[in-house]
Amino acid sequence: MHDPHTDLHSEQGALRGEHPGRARDPVVKVQDLAWLEFAKPDLRRAEEFAHAFGFATVLRDERELQLRGTGTAAPCVIVRRGPRSRFLGPTFLAADTADLARLATATGAAVTPLPASIGGSMVELTDPSGARVRVVAEPHPLPALPGQQPLTVNTGLDAARVNRAQRPPRRPALVQRLGHVVLQTTRYRATLDWYLQHLGMIVSDFLYYPGQRERGPVMSFIRCDRGTTPADHHTLALTLGPRDRYVHSAYQVADLDALAAGGEYLRARGYRRSWGIGRHIQGSQIFDYWRDPDGFLVEHFSDGDLFDAALEPGWAPFTASGLAQWGPPASPDFLGIRPGPESLRELGAFGRALRAENEFDLHRLRGLLKVARS
Image 1 (tube, helix red, strand yellow):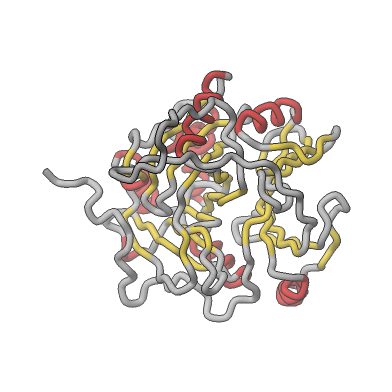
Image 2 (spheres, rainbow, N blue to C red):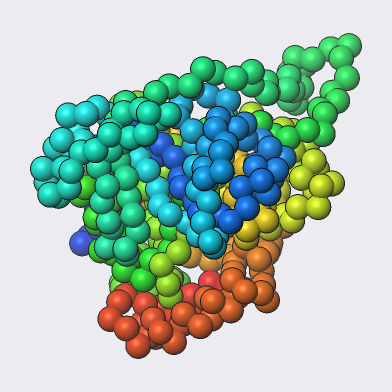
């Protein structure tokens, strides 16, 4: 029988003339994703879900909620009170303030101080899709919190645990850190090149619509360039679509048991799983996706790939079955085709995108529809 995963692992490289996956002389090289910002009308409800998901609160007042993992980085999610729920933009971490000055000079932006509760300074930019992008340097580190330790596991003939039963508690899967954010854009190529040129990021994997490779990629998994120091397979992922929007964000937890038991904790409290549990192909993460009360898609993950700057991009066809090595099929909710407000917004965007001047044309629409059926 044919293995449906044959040729879906994207270790195969580029063909002559295809996108190199990096800029020749970037302005700066960001080191990580610092935090994400959202607006939501109900901070109490947002905090309640956040605690069940595994975040801890750094700050909460009438206007703002800051959430963190157990590590020492600055808050990884900032929620501001607003009249409607929306994603405000990603914030990346620069190596130092000299890089901020270099980025400001290259773009004509200003270096401004961050609030005292966070510390450091920032440059605010806008990418070609219209997203607000902030780059920060030297925010205050946070004291580490007690973490969730990976379980001692007996693997095959290796008996590391003897005379001890395994009883992982059903409790929130404690978030260790922010891993990545996925964004959809109608101007995929311009937006991709902007991040590579301005922030010095590099592509780990490209995906293209089956039968349309000659037209170029439609999704990229992008990591930070830390030289010989390994970085997450992707800190940012970009995908072509009919409108500019947030897709999901991902947060690392200790191991599979923490992820699975944390999912049972969320399910028992009435929260909705979108897709999981499974293991991805691009990035290899064990994943579990959930919808928060405001409809945002968020992911627990563990055991992701780490690449240094030497690895060249892989290329693979974009298919729904190619999103996971094992696990249930990608759900209609995850694919954005589950009946509801979000799928209606996406459906309404098709016509507007096809009439506008962008990269999402009729051929790309046909390719995207094939992905959902693959």
